[in-house]
Image (tube, rainbow, N blue to C red; front, side, top):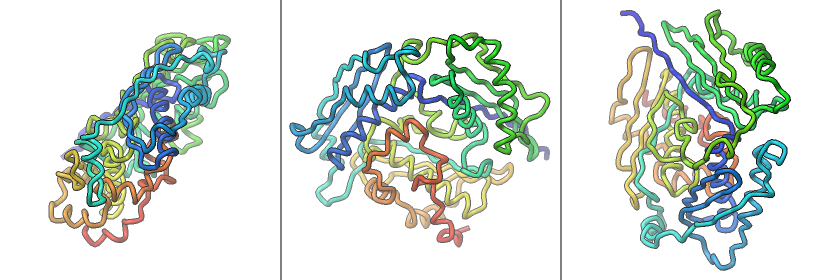
Amino acid sequence: MKSKTILKTSEYVNYGHPDIMADCLSNALVDAYIRYDPQAKCGLETLIKNETIVFGGELSIREPENCRVNVEGIVKWIIHDLGYTKSNGLDPNSIKVINLIGKQSREINNMVVREDGDLGAGDQGICWGFSTKDTDVGMPLDLYIAKLLINKVNNIEGLGPDIKSQVSVEYFENKKVIKNILISTMHDEKISLSELRNSLTILIPEFLKEENLDQYLDNNTIIKINPFGSFILGGSYADCGVSGRKLVVNQYGSSCEIGGGSLNTKDPTKVDLSGALACRYMANNVLNAGNFDEVRVNLAYIIGDPQPSALRIIIKQGDNTSDLNQEIVQKLKSHFPITPKQIIDKFDLYRPIYYNLAKNGYFGNSSYPWEQLDLVEKIKYLF
């Protein structure tokens, strides 16, 4: 039987896009509250439009009357760090902050902090993790290339920081071909549209060659640069940014389901975050232990309950996709952190790492503890 053709498409968005700016601002506050109280419980949402930033959500910290988190100062620093200045349209010193963050519900807090010292899930949640042999870092090829291109364009003077990319890859009989590449980037007024298009159309194939990815190009690959025209006004003046809106971008593109909850804006007792990291960790190790082509891991939680209510592992080899035998799944559970407390302890999640994760991505960076393959040898016997 012939292999079917599959076309996968994923986008990536740079941190100067207003939605990612909102995620970064939320996570910068999460970091600040965790610095003050390592057991802080946060669910901090952000809206940004023009020079106005609105914070909302829930917060539970010890001795709140002594907390000296400088929200306005953090905001100014973050806007500057994300690449915005008065000259490109958003002056950090002109930002207006509306702070509507309230106290976390006592009922929710009591469900999380249990009398037995364990931690209950901070909310109900459906979490997915993914890993693939397509790339060395276990990320889908289309999303991996889309992110590399964003990072490259963002480092070119006069371009960004508001940038989006989109890449489509066709799979057929063990061959992968990039069908099209789209880059939409904010640019200085002094850079003409024709100059921008010409330079990036030349640069992209050269860059992919440097990254040993030119093998996926062919004569029919289409490259589109700013197809809608010039893009001088960007960021929060061109669009309204809201936290938690780039869920697929922050996870695995079109290659894997998502649970619907954002990884950003929250502390790690929220399983949308910690459960998703555990799923990725499990997917990476199972992929390499079983020498599969792809692995998808699904965890589900009930609010207040430490143990997941469901665990499903889906494996792919060649054209065959199936659920992993439940007997093996149950044996795997004993090797992996799956309760909120186990996950938090394993990955040391109560530390101020969340701004960097919102800015640069949660997956595909080998320095992150949930990316490690330290359980491969221990679980190989199951496959």
